[in-house]
Length: 405
Length: 142
Image 1 (cartoon, rainbow over the protein chains, first blue to last red):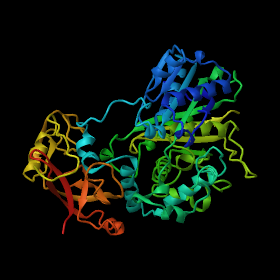
Image 2: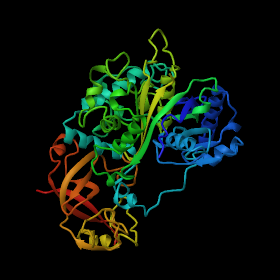
Image 3: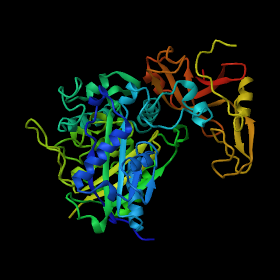
Image 4: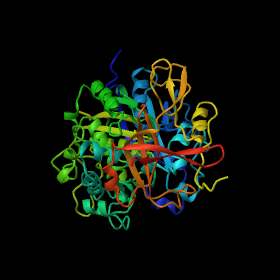
């Protein structure tokens, strides 16, 4: 079996025209967000959509391909929640390494905010709930289950119990994300100008924010926004043929432990322990060599648990990475979630695409500059670990990315 | 008819019938593999540990320990919406595997007190939702 490491590179990453809360006035649809992002990334890279050979999205692939008159040779609609896009990169790498395609598109569009206004229309999702699905009768269904916070809170409780962590430890993750958001003018919570609740926060602010599902407070929980994004991935041979620099896929892995949290053995350990191992092995690198962390932050607890599973901190010891602002701008440790994260930048429901876009920007030296005299969020990182988490801490995709040398 | 105002599960007739039949009599019925002897939850048509298709149901103790919980501050489903904060929980069953449910008779204003009860014994209590469906709930053992 050959190792596909470095067989492909990401050569561009872009967002839809507008993201965040702004669209909720006029509204948007999933399709619109997809197409805007694809149009933007193709322009950035200098490629026509018709040159795309493989189309990867979380359940929207035929609609995208038809809309853009793409006649793909490779169709992938893997939809496993927010981690789907990291899995798509993995799949694209495999397809390119196998010689099936040379140019792949991974795309995302999700009108999480507008769906409320539109009462679900324009989301293109599959039908209603299945009353006979196991979760319907034996998980949240009879007990008022309503969404991710309802579930994830149990994992945080268990971490507090099993490892002696504190709510303050988790709050520090939210503070770090917010500090990065203050350097990102596109972040929803960048400042008072972008949102009345924007601007820097403290650990005490997190603890004092409204309780959602104890032990989760409002500021432990991600935003709900509109967001689109897309990345283009090409074979090693083509990596230097475009206007934009390549960022190499050194390692990729995916795994899952369960879908419903009812089936999660240890509520403080996700399958990132396995997807991470696969990605590190493929890359021939380890956690100590990672210079940037883009870690799915649906909740503060998601980050805490994930960095431990990836070996970036010992089990029960996630706080080592965040205490004293180590992970934040100008911090002494590994920078984590430099876009402001799902907690303070943007989170449409499936956040994994935003991880990819920011990782590409950081490693290609194109992270946005700061504003108003604040130092930019561009870091000096040459390597990044990207981990998406979907469902209820269920599905994970891990990537090890490296800058072009 | 009862005055149960919360979502009533729609019993799946293929895999979980014995559970719902037992529930009507206040018994916790669990599926166990005839080949590897392990208990699994939720009910399946095969054992998720050894993939045997030979499953039997037995009456369990209805007891377990509190594995984790959350105090739900908000809800949207009928009945729960009007309930005010309530406690959801994962219970490690004495016979193996884990169930999800709601923990009754705890002070939702003191999550730290409930936190101190993780690992404590709990027992099941079925609440009649309709003539056909009794819904499992949990209480801390006194």
